[in-house]
Length: 112
View 1 (cartoon, rainbow, N blue to C red):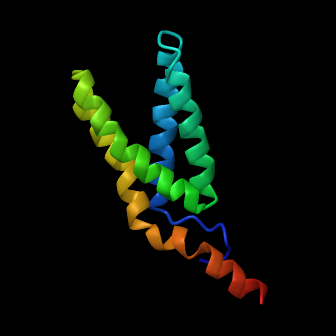
View 2: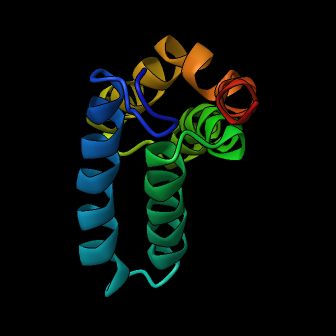
View 3: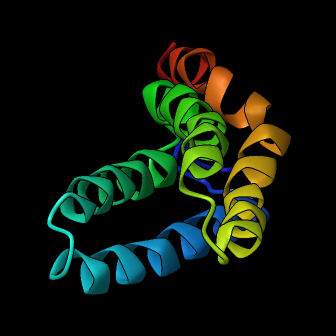
């Protein structure tokens, strides 16, 4: 990485997937206002992932693992599609673990 905010290319898959989820949450939000909470979380995650923040890394993992538990109780016909899209967020973030964890040490070495 050449700068402290250089985003690995694979991570853009997560960002685009979260943006797609955000559009769906926005549309569904007019029918179910609780979806606006999910929209806010997605937007927060997008900005955190772009900046390679540790809290975004851990929150993404938590939310991505929480989604299947919630879907078990809803038993929607779209559950499989949602889980696949969920994996498009989780897997690239896990692949880029080193980018999230080493951001503080990279910044320290650049400033010294």
